[in-house]
Image 1 (cartoon, rainbow, N blue to C red):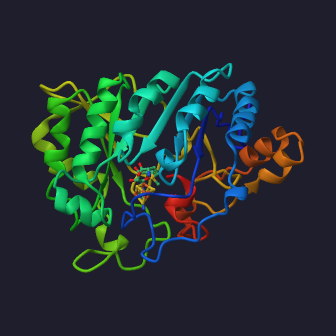
Image 2 (cartoon, rainbow, N blue to C red):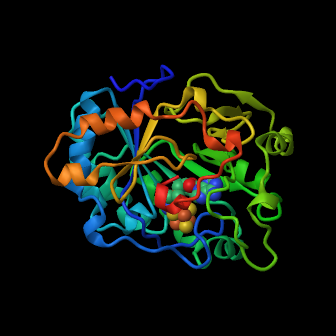
Length: 328
Ligand code: SAM
Ligand code: SF4
């Protein structure tokens, strides 16, 4: 088993498959963009699968694919297919911006993908284009419907809640769970290399921060009831919504961190194990993989180095990568 120094068992591997993205969300990507990795330094699908095989032999049961935008990587269903036959992996999921989902939902489901998270911070097309620096709301919406039709379930909608950006829409977004069997999850904005200006008439990351407690107050009219039995092992606190088939989730990495329950390890597209999203420490795994050396010691080392809680707690901010390069 992969057990960290604080007694937490690691059962979840979050894998970023690319540092490329077809959007440039203001809270995620710096305005000047990022220095993209050369293809040679990105893990190949066989290499990702070999890491997952070792992790699965040591207790990892869940894998989530993320990015950058994972669907910009050619033939992602092939990777899903490779991972779905690994013994011990019970759950494969994907976090996507949904732009390419209409095309890929069915091939992904057929390859073994179980469920999906789609990021959608607004229901207003113009605002969507502004937050994502050019994205099409309608395309993402069609992607979500295609995922539903392909049988991916549950569908989770990730909403980064931001004061002065989309806080006037939180009720409308939550009401999606009244009409659809989806889980709408509100996430606090995290200060990960997004301190630069977000653009004209937009707040910066500090001004945009909206604590979950305040979001809950704004949703008070929905009469949320704590849900028993979680959908997945993630950090969201889940609630039922009277009169609707969906759920509401809250993810509060800043105002009420859930580090004590952390069960995860991250693998970046360029082959680094990252013990904690919000701490810069990383262990390179790519050289060992390419030399044919065992990766278990590196997995064990990364797990042993997991901090008890993230560094924002001590007022340090991660500085080496932006969210897009980590995978969220
Ligand atoms: N491109 C995919 C997407 O947008 O879903 C996957 C990668 S994205 C980095 C993963 C998740 O991180 C998304 O739900 C996104 O909204 C969230 N995210 C990015 N930057 C964030 C930030 N600064 N604070 C909170 N969540 C953030
Ligand atoms: Fe791309 Fe996702 Fe980051 Fe938006 S949140 S820039 S879609 S990686």
